[in-house]
Image (cartoon, rainbow, N blue to C red; front, side, top):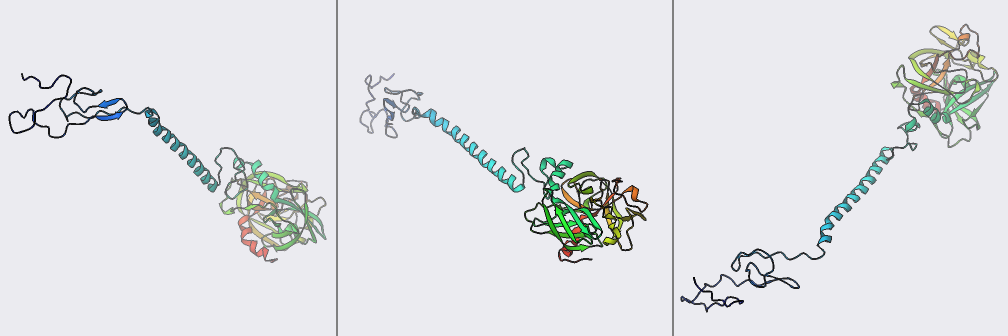
Length: 374
């Protein structure tokens, strides 16, 4: 065994390099690695295992060891937590943005972000979301748009109903309610009274348009679509039977496309002129006359039949679907005791009423506004 040439505790001392046998050991392929300074008080030698080495594995020989990782600074724990904090911040920001987006979408869609009813409306109606499909909800929403009409003529006074269709006071009613009237008074659901003038009439369809003088900001009804109604659909009627303003009844659509014949002028139906507002407007149905004689001048139209209770004074009022949309204008009601030709307002409704489909009204509205009368 060759004796070590290195004095104890010192680094190897190599003979001068040359070509002779004395050149032992052979020169290294590169300069010896220098110590790595990692921080105050610590020095790491790469793989030498010599004095001053602190920690790490020993691989023996210069240049073959891997530098040992420097100790982490005291702030290591804080840096390790930063990704977690960053992720939390990102999550919070995403939640906020998501909430804002959902709210904006809800507003554009017409729905609130909360589950409570805040008066949101069903599209095309004024019935609140929570009350849709209920008689109470329909009555609350539509009653402010239904008025009582008092018409004075040479034959006396009569009472009917009407529907507000513009905030400025345009009101739809039956032609027979205001036919021959010398003056018209309209009472709102609030009790306020206006004078009204006739804009246009269509006796062939038993429709009339009147306008309140000096009115503004009135709540208006929504005109629906009568083409989609079916037998059995639930409906609500609102009017002023016997002068009882804002009376609500309900029932179903009992038949469609009934041929109803009514008088075209006031003379055929002026048995309506009882004091107190009784208005038994005569009509023909199924080859028989009801509520008196219709006279010689008559008109026939296709009507919606309903079993919602209609009484004298309901004429011109609204027949409403469960979304709060007007689907018909009530025009005739059967009073059993008057079927023989006599007239009586005391018999009341027997569940046989008729309404002019709202699509008939909508098709005629421009003509009425033009002031045409027929």
